[in-house]
Length: 217
Image (cartoon, rainbow, N blue to C red; front, top):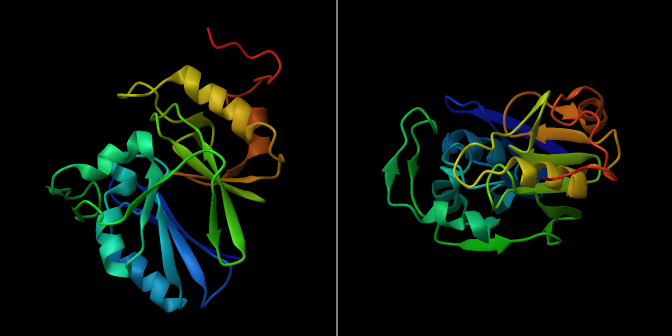
């Protein structure tokens, strides 16, 4: 498998390129900006971008979705609950998104829990993991979890922004992530990668979370 990452913008958003190998179909996860750099990476590996996946609708993750879609001709995938963020008027996002001019993508398709995104002989399982936003998505490929702003190394995504909910986030972790193998590599929206086992053991927000006893009141 080919996996490349770029760190983009003032908020240091992690953007990922995933493909079975060189000269193959690929998806781009969370194109925050710097479209020329993303396209250059795709061309260098002779990859055909067949989909642009947004983990959620915050501008620091999807501001480049429209321009990248225009550049490569691929549809943008997002959860319906966050899709409104793609329909905002043309806005200049200097610095925050690497100077990208955010425009509404021409092709938008919705994803929901249980869907699969086929990328050559790879299949990413779609997990609805709200809490940071109502339409938060994670993408699971055996051994890897692309989780946006759900879980970070030693922390979790903010839940005090509009549409956020700590209860929803912890429930999503409990129901969708907790039973994945402990050696699953977590590839977050910001910061370094980690593993699920490390976060179970050391993340103060998740440590001791027991799927059988967790309470949401």
